Length: 84
Ligand SMILES: [Cu+2]
Image (cartoon, rainbow, N blue to C red):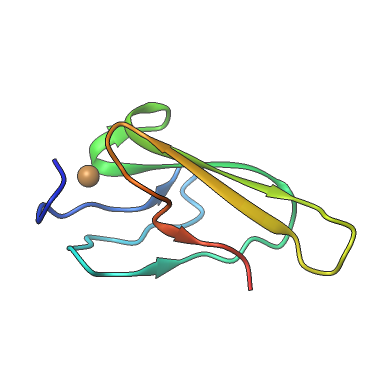
């Protein structure tokens, strides 16, 4: 499922969808508010199933929230960039 196979970064709530992405492609999402946001690969997963992940955006008291990601189902690292 990994390697050169295409994947997507698709929000559980459909608020964003990268479309097909291949090795080396990048996709960024900016979150304006704190919260927990699920995403998945439309080819290899579903919300909370198989290839999916969670972005946790925490308010830190400053202007910019901080973000961390966790992924499961074989995705390594966080394919999403944090807020800027
Ligand atoms: Cu995939």
